[in-house]
Length: 304
Image (cartoon, rainbow, N blue to C red; front, side, top):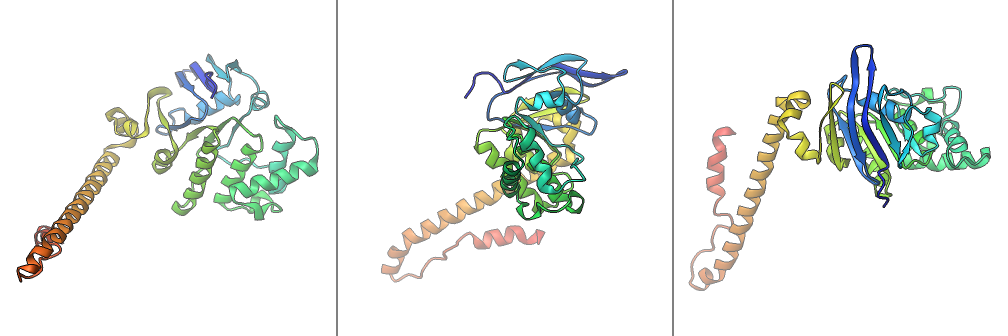
């Protein structure tokens, strides 16, 4: 693993008139890390991605990829450094098939083949990886929301990136459609890819992130391990809200209570098993295998 971070920003910022959309954001993302980025609407999350990938030019600070200063470089120049991204609003080439959309990245990416036949073959492999291998001949306009998101994923992977920035790839997905995306991120992470995930879906952030960055009003509010960040009072106040905190606390208490109940039941079962031979030889009756059952029923009955 390289000692040089895959991505480093130093005092990064951009101003639109009097508005500081991103303000003095510094961070270092080592190789293989998955960084979740969260924050309220308008916090500067997508603007941050645009600054890193060259779609916006910073008014202050710098962006380094593998130690190379790429501040203000054009998007296609930064892409040659093996940086790829998805867009919050999907942007396929409407006049091409799904397969051809992916083949463009293979043809003109850092490892461009120059041969369409080779590019199309690799495109099919990538489509299989993201789960839409059977949709290669379709126009992008016929795709469902979930499949259009997968196409965005595939187009980014066609560049064979070292750094992948995902801008709300799970937005608009049903709960059952989120898990395949999470598994794909896990698979990429297992290969050592460095990933930045902008998401509002907390399940996704908790499932894949090693660290979480919180942006608020364009500024870095907090950076740290996911559960530590999501339980921080400042983060709750600025973004998650007290209802989220209360719900998480209730879920934690319920899980702890269930774990304690299981432990008590297991201990009671062991005690009953240990005492059974002695009672039997004395001609006594067998003990109740769950001696605490009556007490538990009595305790929960008023709430039932």
